[in-house]
Image (cartoon, rainbow, N blue to C red; front, side, top):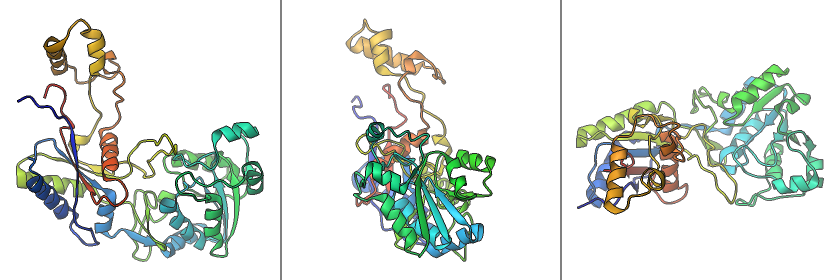
Length: 396
């Protein structure tokens, strides 16, 4: 019988992961059990994805605000510290800010506007136009910002992040001055000691600061890049990719992930005889059209993946073929012509008209987004995703 289903994505339930658990054993056992219970066969080129959260939990990669404070204090001493371009998130940054505040004497908090790096808005762009404010040139004090825009709560969380972040700093008896600017150089008028908290633009921000008189310039990936008094750490990303664990601690992005995916692939090969691809995923890379939030708050979508997931798709746009190359064909004749075209397509379709609109993003970004949307971030209880047919096409 002709196959009528293409890609199939399954969220797999598993046990609650604790520190010291073998994440490799748990993932393999969960996949095999799901295959048995749900009645599907594991095939070559199937994909298993594992959320970064349970990998970090198994590793015990945690740190407290005291660990953060000690590292920050060692880097900045008694300096006034500019904390610039943080994302607006109780889960992602609030606990980090508490640790930063506990390690310094004064904070100048510089927020980008109208939104943070990942699209959380402090004020609507249309209101900026109405008020005649240019976010690329205008620097605002907290008083000026309030006079212009008042108090605005986040669309989804209902939090006024200006008040919230300021209160977290002042909780430790630390003075906090809030300013608004999108120009990194603005902070240098207040202090030469800066902790830049942006994620994907951090290298540019640091370069600008260092080239314009900044003296002590660090980014979040420099904080907890090594263990502090036995804490967790991440040598590549530091605090980037961390999540709130408790009111006084964070779970860091997992480290040393490549051996994990390679081991899972090896174990599945031993158990099933099939070559299954494996990746660890964090936030997907997509944008919410209502809240305008770009989801990617992790430094990368995937910190580790097996070799078969390297690269970008090499796909033909079916509707282009149907409307152009084979516009005169119908039914089985059209199906046969398209199938033959796909079977004989080149290995590199970049720039080809037949491939336009296929958006050649990295496979890991596409699969990571698919996985993140499937697992969600709430109580679905499916931190592992099993994907079949992803590499198939119309001819399979």
